[in-house]
Image (cartoon, rainbow, N blue to C red; front, top):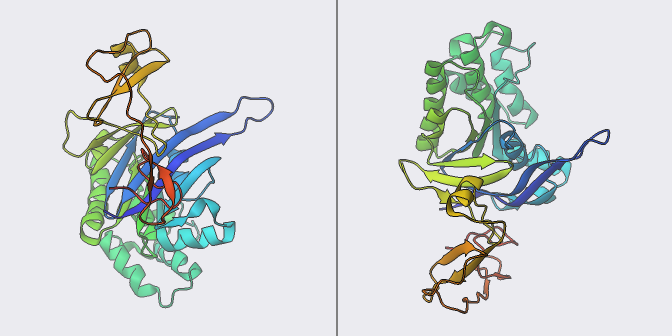
Length: 318
């Protein structure tokens, strides 16, 4: 599958003000989004979810790491080009609607298209408003709309320039259960029928489980992934440099200390981790398998053997 968005070893550190400690919001995050995929992100408050969405969409720049969108390294784009790139490829929906209060609903939806220089945006505007069930409310201003209508209006604005990727932050956070599901049903229809790629942050587990993949983030690190309909298996995230973060709960359960040893099976098909105080298991070869380098077929540059993504161009190895 084509990767439309990828983040490699992304860090975001907010510098402390007035001698306060710096806040590390993201710690080496690795995320990928495939074309036509719906991915949800869950985690407790303060875990870095909103920062993640903002960094992936180029709204704020990471402290370190690389972000690729449709093959473009957006972390190295100048600000002016980054703004234009966002306008052409990305759509954003946030928990609090960012509609312009003095404009009508129709004018709000037309605004992004006018900024982008598109001609005759009215037909596209009416098409979007009809799709979200708000065509009859097009002359109303935001203050005259309900919470559910505001969110559907925000979705229409986000889709006005036909983005390839939709990024959402608590899209349904202020909505009742029925309205929340109506909004998500509309987005899922776009995802399935038109191939819109979506990455959505949510506190709502019911919404999260409807995604193709669910990422769980904590303390600025993506801990696990779970595929849709997989009730038991959690997939642990391995970074582009081969790092894996083991949740504290699991570390305590298996008795891991801060330092662990590892060995590679004689077949070279799996690793065995064990506490540093434990002797090397007899069943594992005494000498670990040494991985070599490999060549990226996309850019022909050399990368470490164990990486999943090319550190130069973002290509995913099969």
